[in-house]
Image 1 (cartoon, one colour):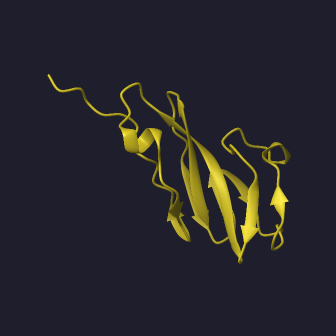
Image 2 (cartoon, one colour; image 1 turned 60 degrees about the horizontal axis):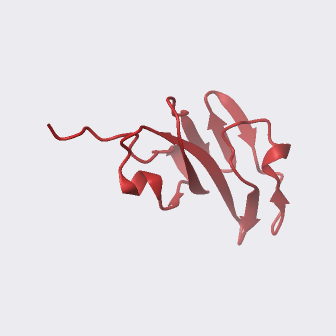
Length: 102
């Protein structure tokens, strides 16, 4: 599964994991296995505020965009994140914030 991040200023990051075509967000399971090749499922058709865009399947791989909350001092790589690929396990979000140098 390709995970894209949509960065927003926020105070809480979700806990997300992937197992095949199943995405678990804060304990709620989203089984995306029913999305056929070439199809797009709009974000508003999914009962989760953490999905920030449509879910698509291309070449057998799902692509999902997740809201990625970050702190006021988030580094550039958090504010402009690269997509990641996760087949199984915990989704590691970009750094939430950085400590300011004293």
